[in-house]
Amino acid sequence: MCVRPGRGERHPAPGESNPGSLAGGTAPLRVPVRPSKVSGVQAFYCDHFVLPLPAGHRFPMEKYRLLRERVAAAGLCDLSVPERASRTQLLRVHAAAYVDRVLGGTLTRDEMRRIGFPWSPELAERSRRSVGGTLAAATAALAEGVAANLAGGTHHAFADRGEGFCVFNDVAVAVRALQAEGRVRRVAVLDLDVHQGNGTAAIFADDPAVRTVSVHGRNNFPFRKERSDLDLELPDGCTDDTHLAAVARALDAALASSPELIFYVAGADAYEGDRLGRLSVSKEGLAKRDRLVFSACRRAGVPVAVVMSGGYGRNIRDTVEIHEATIRAASREGAAAVHAGPSS
Ligand SMILES: [Zn+2]
Image (cartoon, rainbow, N blue to C red):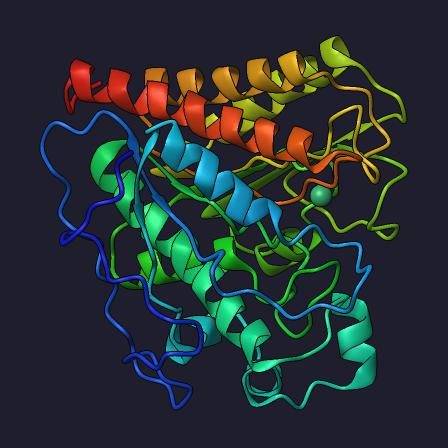
């Protein structure tokens, strides 16, 4: 197992204050320096910031802890807790009034209904940590080729509202933070979650520097789709071959924009055993998808930050297994990138 005692960040208690306070400021990201010969990828987690949900709530919150435990047991990653995203970072994407309602606990009943979670201080904290995890993963990916957030992929969050279990748009905030720091200019978002990345599409609709590509179920949420740069819609019940053909097309389109970084919104919900997915993609098909993405990006020399996004398996173990396979594929590619050297 590769948690770094004494190197990574201290595992902070939920609710513990840190420099990225509600009052704003730019909390510096502390991406720990990596030991030179670690074979796994860097991965960031925030599952210990647990949302209090009513009994019977349909969101599988425990999948994040289960995933982190499996990834740690398998020794796949170098695990760290990310900083929370600062208010300043959030404001590069989100409307100030919306951010303040989330942070201050003044969301309306209708806003909470759209998001699907009741407000709590933990919701605000966890949402910020999840965004911070994606930013940390993107920063690590730029240095090392591949890195992961074991949360994130909250692609239904718009600039001024959240929906579908998404509060802040982690990928969009990370893109804007890296651009503001001058670390990247052109970015692609490859969204293979079964639901359209509608918030991401809307946020970057008029930005030619960010190519948004989404492969999703035609008949699935959101029922009013936004326009990504490329949308590939899949019919109900679609199986591996159709799905993988769409993935290959989407990947080509993402790489054709010559991005300096790709955000891979993986999603486990195209799986045939998913409660919400409506597709019939096997675990083997999803593993092929992951290999396709990571190997194509490595060949193209484009760093990848992978985020988890949705997964609502009838059996939660299936969802966790699919996410773990994604991290395993990332780890293999990360190791290959290290062996191939920085010019690969
Ligand atoms: Zn989804």
